Amino acid sequence: MIRKIRDNVDKISRIEVRYAEDDPEAFIASYGCTARSALAAVKMLRRDGYKVGFLRLVTLWPFPENAIKNAMRGANTVIVPEMNAGYMANEFRMLGLNVVPIPKLGGEMPTPEEIYSVARGGVTS
Image 1 (cartoon, rainbow, N blue to C red):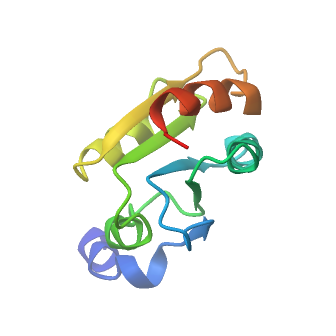
Image 2: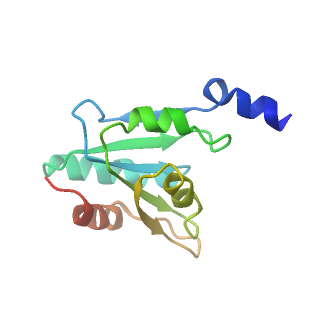
């Protein structure tokens, strides 16, 4: 069963990509409830002149490696806010990307302002 799923990753997995048309140098990637904060941070960054894209994982498994690589082509950094110890950041690291994790524990969600602050340090305008 697992082999059948892995053989059909491109048919099963889903991602949402925004703001990729101007070849951003970085993406903020998120999933679940943190995606709202991540999208708000992307909008703030773009308003301030930063070329940053947004990638939301709709499905987590199987991990959509090919779709992510295609969406992020040309980008060298992915910023990953999460409500855990950085598990999703590790998945992005395995793709050979420069990863800036924003792990947050204790049931609190990363705020758009926190994500914005971290992202400003890793993205040029």
